[in-house]
Image (cartoon, rainbow, N blue to C red; front, side):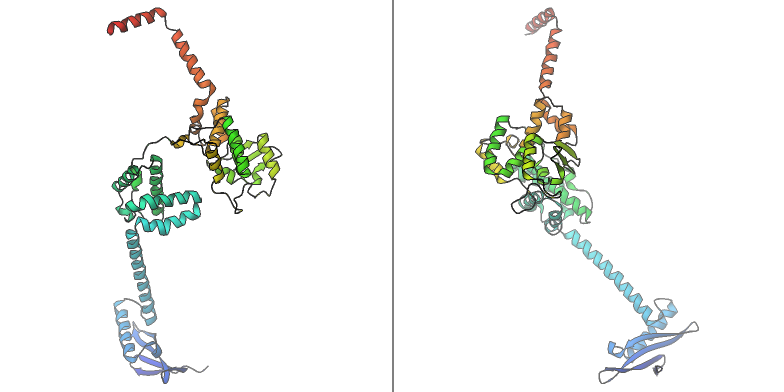
Length: 416
């Protein structure tokens, strides 16, 4: 290979011509600077004429490199100086980007965060019913009140306004509780994603008090009547209702039930990863066993109850509500605790067992409650509870001397 031919065109500036490449009508020319520093010769390539380099520009850069070398600043070659400049520019760009991101987060309103970040995320994480409820609460109540405010501007005063707006509109304390809970989840997600720093205002707001415990349960006659109607309307909903009445399963547990969880031979249902986070095993009644025997078995991973589309059921069919309506169970009922819903079947299961003398601890295990406190709502149905209280009170009164009662009555008349 022929040795490259350099030509000195100025003191410290050399050039070489490209053997083939042209810059205009002339060959492209590469510029290089050379100078002495601390007894060392430093050569620094600069660039091609086609990249904008000229003799004047090369001289200026050579003098800059000499000054940098004397001052001990920057690189001693054009390449090093260019790298240092690039790194500085990247640092500045990163800093500017960080400032812009911070400014964007500071200016992001609650509405922008919900629509662009929070709601798309929970659609993938939560069940359809759950994220749809949150979207409705945000769209109808939260957004019109505080949606245009950035996170740092939302205060407890704003939340009090939201409370007043909803209560004045006649919304129930339970609905208001849902709205405040939704807002709290939005704030916590914003905190995790770096869109909010500081106190979450929902932690300081006073929540409405309400008793949401359902008290309605079916009598045996009502249960049979409802099942008869469902059997004609929808065999699948009939099967699910019977399963809830006989085994106390939640609707979600029924929707998620696979053949792998059903042991027809031993008459057992094995529920894993339930709502409470606890697994439990239930025994089938003869009617439940007949249902499963007539349907299957299927593949272990196959869902037992399917939606019309062939996928997983998300909510109970309208057939159940229509059956309840036909049975007139909810006619004239305005208190939601007294209304018959699919959950009433599970509530009836527990109520019947307690009334028959099954202990609360046993019922707790069958229902899969996380604590006994959740099961104690059924304690008033225990046949022993009221009898024991009445017997105890009778015994107390039997201990009182009749003469003492006469004296007490005389004193009371005298006081009057």
